[in-house]
Length: 259
Image 1 (spheres, one colour):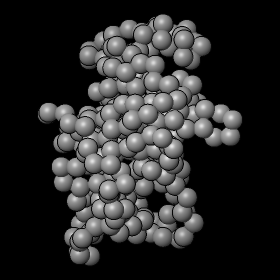
Image 2 (spheres, one colour):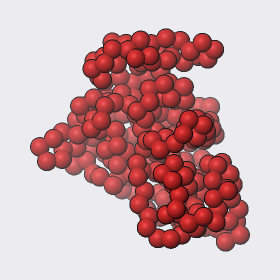
Image 3 (spheres, helix red, strand yellow):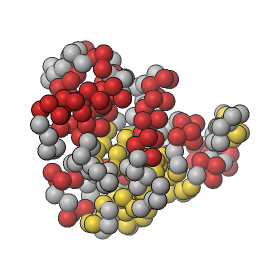
């Protein structure tokens, strides 16, 4: 699939208190590509997602969606094209799982019957169909994470050819099987044309599923390329202060980090 810029960032800087979080970052993210943001804790990965969503602003920086300035997108329109799964999603109401997923339909032009069908499809994709009538507060952390992913997928049901999916540590509460199912689903969305950006700490999951890795350290992009280009022993040692070996996967074309 031909890649086109879905997101363009120009001269993004961010300071919180006396700490520089992002330092004059310029980059772009393509349609049809899954990008993983890597780096140590506190290095700016989640902050970069918040800049992309305009939750946080960079005083001098510029954000474009599909080559249009972010300021030109009406919030209700952008909500149909950009979905974000944050690190944690607080919801204290005693909603049923189905009702939580259907909250994704708020920005959509869709009738109740069609929304229910879209929600069912996304609950199946995220493996929460069996939880449909459960009360959200009763779920485990991993179940809640998958329910919110279904909600975000529902929100993007009418994104068409302009689709951005941002996932901030989407596997943090998941068991092994659901980690892979979630990232395989994200990969499929990218193959269908979406621009998918994921914050990950697991370098091996990033290597297996991402088309592109962007390594951040101390607010700067220090490496940007394929998993083979970015995941080198030298870079891992420099960024994480930890010695690791990088070896080929025995049967697939991606590197494995062994520490």
